[in-house]
Length: 163
Image (cartoon, rainbow, N blue to C red; front, side, top):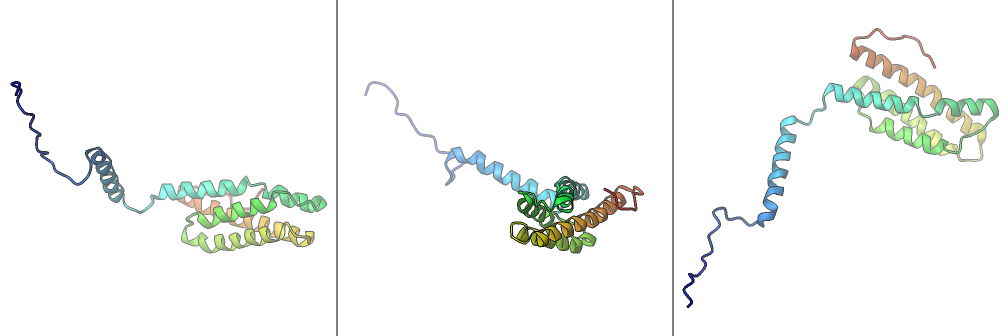
């Protein structure tokens, strides 16, 4: 020997079956799970209202009113009518509506489904009628949604339909 001491390997004070590089990731995942469970699974009322406001804004800015006007004016069916109906149906079905709006939401989603199924067909009268029904249904529904939101905000809102 040359006078050097043999190197002793230290015993790991924290033996684990995980590779050391993964320990921080596991701890982060556990910490995240603890935080998530501490926050609870209930969505806050303000978050629910924000989701409702987002959904009603999408409905109101969808171009459905203009589609109905084009049908009324000259029978034109918009090239994106089916896609619009399917997107609106998806928004309505995936939004967590308050109990008093759940049934009207399902009815509106059905109108959008009906519209999507006929707008690309040969029967323009049927397509126009479906667009008109969806448009009228959307106005009735968004009126009820805004009434709900006004109540939530403590505002005496407009009690008439408007465009």
